[in-house]
Amino acid sequence: MSNKVRVRFAPSPTGGLHLGGVRTVLYNYLFAKQHGGDFILRIEDTDQNRYVPGAEEYIVNCLQWCGLEPDESPQKGGPYAPYRQSERKHMYYEYAQKLVDSGHAYYAFDTTDELEKMRTTLQSATNTNPQYDYSTRMHMRNSIALSKEEVVELLEKGTPYVIRIKMPQIKELKFTDMIRGEISFDTALVDDKVLLKADGMPTYHLAVVVDDYLMKITHAFRGEEWLPSAPVHLLLWEYLGWKEQMPRWAHLPLILKPDGHGKLSKRDGDRLGFPVFAMNWTDPRTNETVHGFRERGFLPEAFINMLAMLGWNAGTEQEIFSLDELVQQFSIERVHKGGAKFDFEKAKWFNHQYIQRMDSAELVTLVKPYITDKGITTTDEYLAQVVGLIKDRCTLLPDFWEQGHFFFHTPDSIDVAAIKEKWADNKAQFFTQWIDVLKNLSDWNHTSIEQSFNEQLQQNGLKKGDIMLPLRIMLVGGKYGPGVFTIAEMIGKDETSKRINNALNII
Ligand code: GLU
Image (cartoon, rainbow, N blue to C red):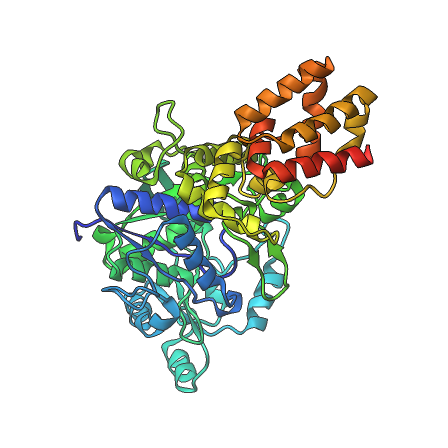
């Protein structure tokens, strides 16, 4: 076996990328980078019925957004190209044939009707789901049950056939999973899976083993939903004579619904109002959109950090890890066996932490589209100031508009009711007089504005507490935002007077 660590993410292009899928990518990536190895993207598109146009491109874009770029992929190429299984179709037949020759697989000529008939006739109270296996295969039309002559005749006539693995009736199979330890299977429970279809295309089972072998994969981390397929794969590695080269496997735990009951599905996202996919995904067949973390305003670094912690921890109190730190500290042995509950509040907490720590120029670049989208033009310098003032109030990127829109435009409406609650003529008088004073304020900054405000309060015999809230609402629209005198400084003298005047007119 080559000494270099080589791992792969092997998605089928059937739709958008669930956060569980991204976590699989991440754990593969971290392991590869930690060992100076290669991370390969292989597209498993042998099931043409489930193929969805655009899904591969979407997956590639997701990996790019997450900063988890493969070393080899269909787009990048590499020493083991092609990386799309449909383009490797010609490579699989010889291995399927080798299995037939060694008696570990066989031709099966059964038509769909015949298969259906087997299922309905054998179905009983004790056997609710009859399978094509050791108990039924001798009653079917295949190269084990039929005579040699019959098989030759069928082949000569060009009868369509599939190649099935011959699962042994009694065999206990074992392997050591890097997360779960020793796992054993009873092969009698597993059906004779199809390895090669009638059109010559391999199924997932054959293709995954052949490609992991040919691409010299050393470790395979995949979701635990693949555990039931493991006995078929174990036998293929053995029957093809490659047992020594078999990658070490780790089956990753599921990501569970927030209440811990069952696997987190895309429907849970709609139901509970949070994203479940990495990026928005619109299914071209139904036009249905599943929402993504990116569009919700998550930073990829925060998303990745959150995912890393869904099922793993460093064994310390540390929760914030850069990708480099994760590469250093990750260990597959510390991944939990049990499922990890998804917690959207915690996901937001990570994003908030990353926003606070982010370099201002970088944050400006990310926030800018949310501002320009509203038809606002602004300078990076002004935006940087705003971002600095409100970032501690922001959790997701769209919050920058919610929390700071008043820095860019006169609010469309203000909370007049909240002002009116404690309004009085002497307050109206205060504001009218203060606007006049402000006109002559030569030095416009928050200190000078606050000073003039305090002087005016004194003259009118009012307390700060009486006037601060109405002033904030006049400038901002509601009871939120950073320091009110800083807001006045930022929006400028004319705009401050204008907003106070507007408010006085409608109170
Ligand atoms: N093609 C499989 C999938 O869609 C890959 C499973 C594996 O990693 O073996 O997830």
